[in-house]
Length: 226
Image 1 (cartoon, rainbow, N blue to C red):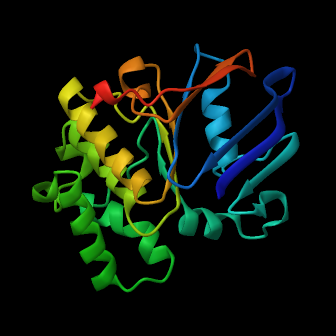
Image 2 (cartoon, one colour; image 1 turned 45 degrees about the vertical axis):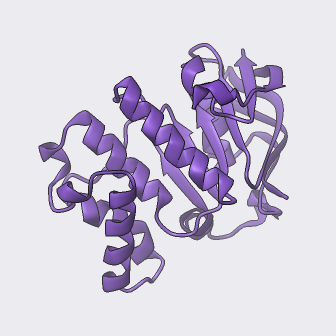
């Protein structure tokens, strides 16, 4: 079943045509990598897929819901979509655990349960020992793992990751891809923007963007990558 689908989507910023009629579908259990040169529309595609931005034309659906008809997009995003932003967007005044808890608390989950879920997913990404530290006290790699934990917490069916291995060494990057792959194999859909062929090799399919258009889409899933 399709978790997210973009149909003939365009996005214009004034005179700039960021996307020019892109169609893409990601199913449950599928990891799709998006590659392309800088300015090709990769981050715009990710923002549209998660409802952070609206298309100029075309249709975006998450689990069959047309996002243009959704009144509370923020609630839909919290419940269905996990993000790993390129600039991480951690809240400086919150500890690592509190950053991970936040989307669950906003959805009405009690603090005790939200904290337990946050600690469990911090352990899953290998940084449970820094749960009480603030972002400024963490290394770049630790901050990246906290951001990934925040995206993984809860039962979200769609994970969007914009260069999630950017601040990480190769071994740690491989571990993060292994986590995303495991969530995918458990039934989530993952859309990954990356410029690294090494990490794209974890995907089931790679879509190449160029000048706002899909230049190529092909199956990959190289077992030798793992």
